[in-house]
View 1 (cartoon, rainbow, N blue to C red):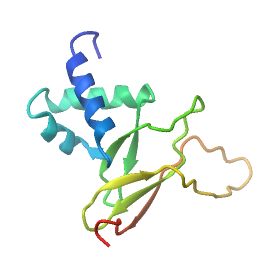
View 2: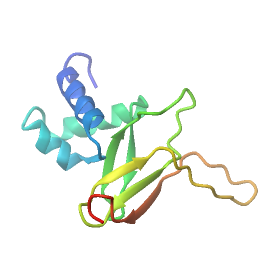
View 3: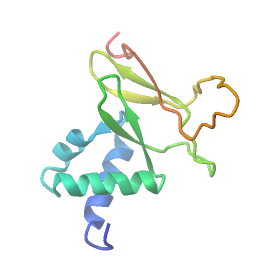
Amino acid sequence: MRPGRNTAARTEILGLINKSEAALSHTEIQAALDGLCDRVTIYRVLDRLTAEGLIHKIINMDGVVKYAYCHECSQMHRHNHIHFSCEKCKKVTCLEGVEPVFKLPEKYKVNEVNFTVSGLCPKCS
């Protein structure tokens, strides 16, 4: 991302993700931006924000990549919480207070964890 060129797009995308109660897909972000920038710029900004640790990726049960703001990340920057994917409304939310527990065989090293649980959210139950 070149300095200055994508500043408005970066600011808008980060603000949009930060304000959203649910994780957003590229398509949802593009629709909300209403022509502010093209789809390639959105992908570049999302990749940059992910690399900077400001947002994180979630893959829902349908294989769609969604993005959420890092609200409770510490200096260790972990996203080892569970994501909930509603089967009815398709919203994906981070369940910040719930960490999955698992045990791997010896000599396996975990770099990233992505747990997605599906069902009905409180609004759809």
